[in-house]
Picture 1 (cartoon, rainbow, N blue to C red):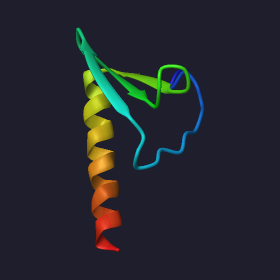
Picture 2 (picture 1 turned 90 degrees about the vertical axis):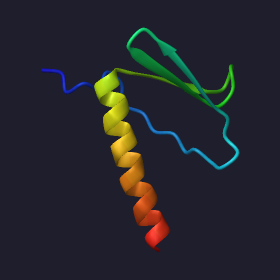
Picture 3 (picture 1 turned 180 degrees about the horizontal axis):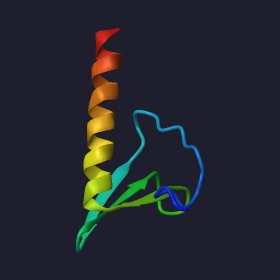
Picture 4 (picture 1 turned 60 degrees about the horizontal axis):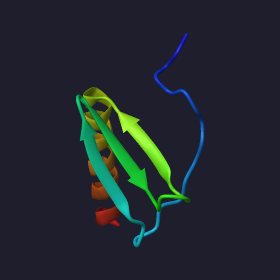
Length: 65
């Protein structure tokens, strides 16, 4: 049974990391890093909103410290 994740990986993203965004149909594509040394994320609309919610929560927690 799939839980919506098709690959397990981790990435450290630092402040100067380029982040590119492209919307294709109903999917959002995020590229973290460069063309030859980056990571691509492809998110459905539901996944994008979930990621936004979790990033907002994390930003609030970091700002509270």
